[in-house]
Image (tube, rainbow, N blue to C red; front, top):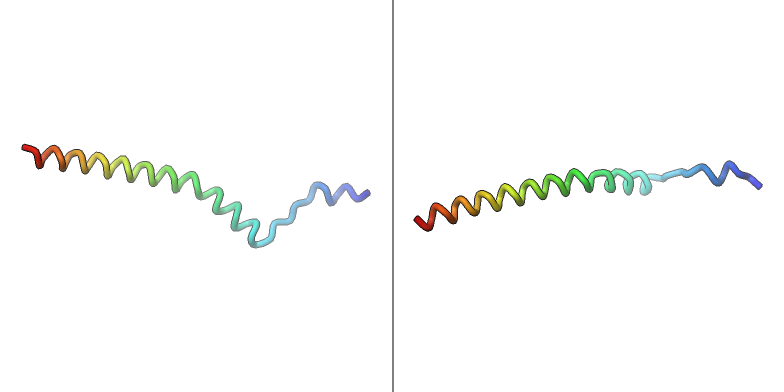
Length: 52
């Protein structure tokens, strides 16, 4: 048996693209959560200033 073939993984262009996109998911989720949090805070401030 050729045991070297069991441990080698060759990623093609599609494989590397998938790895890069998976690594980018976490920063994108964090940035989106921060944006939504900031937007919600701004909306609450504006809503509070319109009531008075």
